[in-house]
Amino acid sequence: TPEGSWRCAWNDAQTPRFLKEGTVKILAKLLLGFITVALLCMLVGVAGDVVASRLSGSVNQLSQQTIPTIELLYQINEQMVAIKVAVRTISNPLGSDDQTFIKRQKDEIAEARTKYADLIAKFDALPKTPEEKLLWDGVKGEIPTVKAYNDELVALADKAVSVADPGER
Image (cartoon, rainbow, N blue to C red; front, side, top):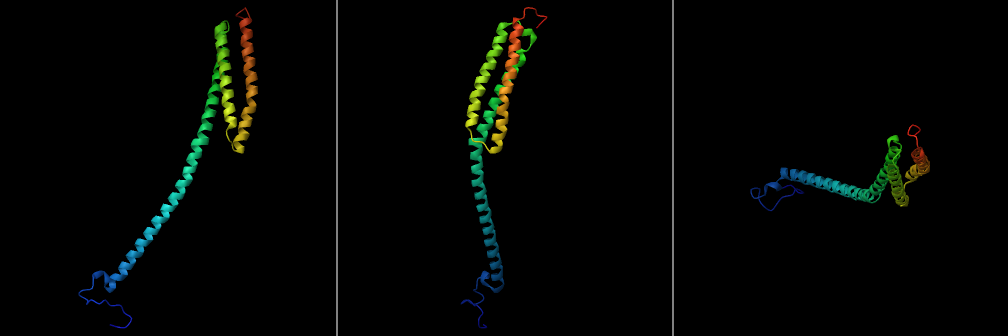
C-alpha cells in the first residue's frame, strides 16, 4: 500500500462494499444530497412557521375587528333601508286616508331611527384607520340631511291625511 492511502485492517475480500474506493464517493454524494434536502426541508418549515404566525395575527384581527365592523355597517344599512321602505310606503296615495296606515309607517321610521342611532354609537366606538374615519365622517355627515328630507315627506303625508278631498291629495 502506498503511504497516505487508507486501508482497512481487513483484506479485500472482507472489506464491506460501501467502504471500497469507488463506493465511498457515491456514499459521500448521497450523504451530501440527503443533508441538502434536509436543510431545504428545514428552511421551508421555518418559512411556513413564520407565515403561519403572521396569518394567525391577521385572522385574529379579522375576527375581532373587521367582521364586527362590517356587521355593524350591515345592520345600519338595514335600518336605513327600513326607513326608505317606510317613507316610500307612506308616500303611496292609496294609503293617505288611513290614519292607522300612516301611524304604522311613522312608528317604523321612529323604531329604525332608534336602532340605527344605537348602532352608530357602537360603530363610532370601534377603532378606524384614518381613511375609514374620513369615509365614515362623510357618511355620518349626510344622515341629518337625509333625516330632514324624510321628515319633510312624513309631514307631507300628514298634510295629505288632513285634506278632505281625495282629488287634492
